[in-house]
Amino acid sequence: MASFNRVILVGNLTRDPEIRYIPSGSAVADVGLAVNDRRKNANGEWIEDTTFVDVVLWGRTAEVAGEYLSKGSPVLIEGRLKLDSWEGQDGQKRTKMRVVCERMQMLGSKGEGRGQTAAPAGKPAARQDSEYSQPAPSEDFGPPPSESPGGEDIPF
Figure 1: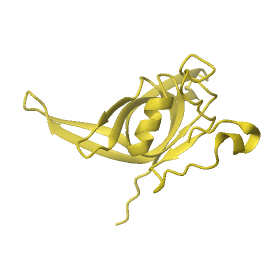
Figure 2: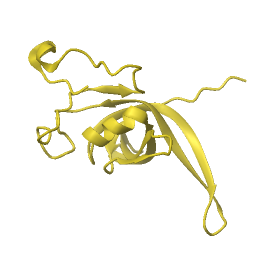
Figure 3: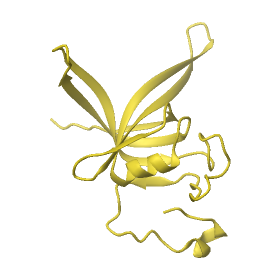
Figure 4: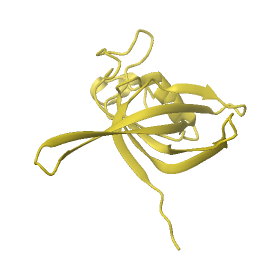
């Protein structure tokens, strides 16, 4: 029997990305995502329903999230579901469903979610609707900022 495991979510980060590096040197970031659903109940009243999802990002995607995203940042996440299981300190078996991010796209305007309209000094500003997935094989990220379309600075 065939199977298909694909998740696409759009929401806001519930906390700042927590980046760590595993022994092989790969970056890993854990983020929380709040996804809102607005619908009418049986009485015709609008109700808001929020779902909180844990997401894990790997490699360059994790590093970009740590640099440019913070609590409240709007983001699109595409990935797959993964059930993690472990034994707790009390001997009980624990499980947690997560989304393993395979593609991330930052949404909103520059600095949204950071409470500012521009990037901090020394950091390039994030582009609106920037897309990040696993790292490219080379470090050539396009033309220098002075040659970019529209004269905007591109941080990648």
